[in-house]
Length: 308
Length: 308
Image (cartoon, rainbow over all chains, first blue to last red; front, side):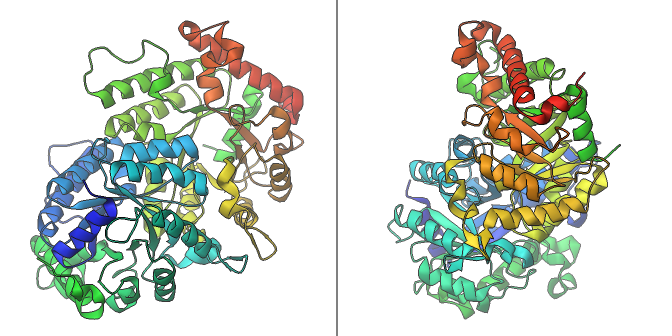
């Protein structure tokens, strides 16, 4: 198997786009008919709904995009039943040829971080993710086990640098030693990524940088030349294709752009609601995915990726 | 039900000590005879071992200490089977009268943070924890859903402030606006805790501060007068009872001290190995717990808690 960085580059080239579909199921918004009638336990009923919902989305998007990003929080919200569904969704996505970035924002000190890395990353792990999102607050020694595991198992991690939420700056933007905390984190990540660089010129240690902060996205693209960026905040949170343009290098590589609600609940968006409605929600998923791909290809260097 | 802060104060008073037993099972260190012979799936076999191991510890410590702290990473390392075991362990600990602080160091942006809070906290949640550890990197809006849930469900959270690991200072100790990042986090937590204060004078929003940094522990105790401190790093990581002294207020309240490996794997420690050995590992658990209680009562204001 090749490195995660190279597998991600190959997948972007093969699909001709860098779109990650965020799998963030919420039971209040599931299209009708997905939860089984016979199941009385509410967690198991919802978990079965999430499984059916995510599998159906995967069937649509596996031909269109390089990767999906299940958000662990929504599965975890259902207790153990949700976690069983999550494992199934990860495994199914990989079967269908998608890379799976597990969005768990995990971390802990040394040997505990190792347990997270061992559990989430790689073919032989019980969850089997290709990459995991990780929080940096605990410092370099908490990141080491994830980096070792990434190298050992050809997997990856994406460390939070500049998050997409309005309050993200409260600590991330504080200035110490002449620059913001997020820049200190970014420097450390770029250092780790440089040490794990693959054939594509990018490393196993990526960074999460929100599309809602386009200036910082541009700045971090130029200072983190060997680092894959995972960019949330597109669509529902306000980020546009234009905002993402600076995230890519000249080849159209270097970043993947996540969209969750804007794709998976596209049947609720006014652009698609009248055309498709809840009954044809999967057609809305396909249309929203294709529209996002077209927008990125029009506004960024992504158009230079060949595509299938 | 009374607030989490008051329930924790009552539990410390009832037991006469502030010891939290960290449930960090590791299959390489389990005493013999806990994994079922008939189970061929390695994850389910280990998960069954973790369940038996944690339940046996809970049976011993439920009469001695106010709370346990299961570390989610070790259960998560076993995949869904581990998560099923974790739910059982949490539920069993609560049945036996212990408060359960779930150590997950979770967080995410707004509505995703809400999913974590909803899933982990309170009697009606599928996991049923009394409190959850939370990471602050995403800022105030990511903490809000946990605080709301804590108030609504009489539960609590402990936000990472100054962690016990050697590399914790890399970002936490950076100085911005005249003081370290961890102090900025601490100020925000104290503000949130003051707004949620219970009869005991402490609030629902606690802080994680390592015993391995006794000076910062003293400083944070004085600047965070309304905040419960959860103190890891005792024992195996080097923290002593003397190091923890400054964490308590004059009543012997204000902090709970966690010990994981030093208690649950006490049979491997030289103080207990010859006396008990693996065959009598539960007696080693009881002895290590009682010794830690005695040390804290001798060296800190904890001796002023009445005890049963």
